[in-house]
Length: 269
Length: 211
Image (cartoon, rainbow over all chains, first blue to last red; front, top):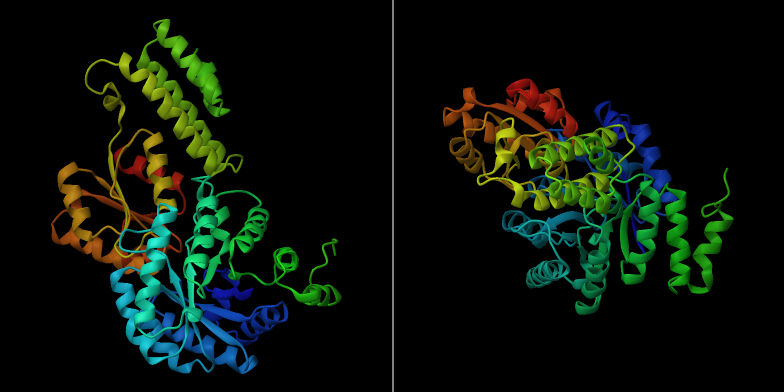
């Protein structure tokens, strides 16, 4: 499982304040704790600070790379212009989050992909909007994959996001996503599937419980990357345990190491 | 019968509520009264939601039960929709151009509907021209613009600009809502008000066109 740490996001109040005040120490501590907890990439999202996204991203990228020179970044913006404006500052091979199959957004992304070797999150949305059923997810995935491959991108660099919808308005939403994940992985060998888990539980109480249950099911269906809060010990514990059960953790090495480091212990502290 | 139906709605007892409706209709209870009780129950479900006792699925379920009751009642209503006379006013709602988020928008549509307003839901990714057209066609006095992405702020501003250009700005009140909206964004877009949840949309609408 590839873990993208989601905490550096201006929709979180403390992060938003820290960015507004250019509080370098706070952000850098957030980055280090995510890496210590098992994040493979650090997601950087400054989208909710109106009109200052590019400046904020540039500052974030600089101070994150200063404190974690080896960390890979996932630059998170729906705007191709913003991505283009900051990409030059990213040292290691970036992940871009994200494009969709919507005509304008995809076309905006084309020159960026051509200029820089990167991983790319591709949301299964097209001009019709959010997919209404499993087949529509698959159609969108197929088109995105073939369009990206035509641009020279390798399948291994493509992270298909099936767009999880909340079970609170449609209790079939979970099954639909699980089936779609399974089919994307089977029908497009080599491609990755990623998702932001927490949408599944929108509008319900004790969301983390639903998120964890869904993570387990989604990993069984073939999810091999997730955008999560790596500081959520219960979620990360579930993830590591599930990896063992799915034979993704040889001789349980990651799991037992995480135990020794106090990372999967479930007893109250 | 009145209190019983309201209570069954509040407790989300689908089968019991439908059975009671059937029985009451057979006994000659005024179908308009039945609908009023059912709506009252849904309104109370909305209150429980606002108080954190109920959740989104409960709201959707209440809407489903109400639909079922409507179906049973319909044949007993005279020709023409008796229902319409109870509508308090018209509201246009849509997620602005470039944004496809619908959960928040749907909640606002649902809550306004439940509170007696006639809602014209334009859907998601709605071009500014469509809002202008809808105002002309429906004569609505209230427009709600929804958006979750920060990109939506510009689309909201442009939509309100288009409404102004069509010389309709003075005839409508415009409210905005979505993810990150605050006073500053409201001023930026040129809207009249913003709301943080679906009930605020109802309060704003009430303040503007009554009900």
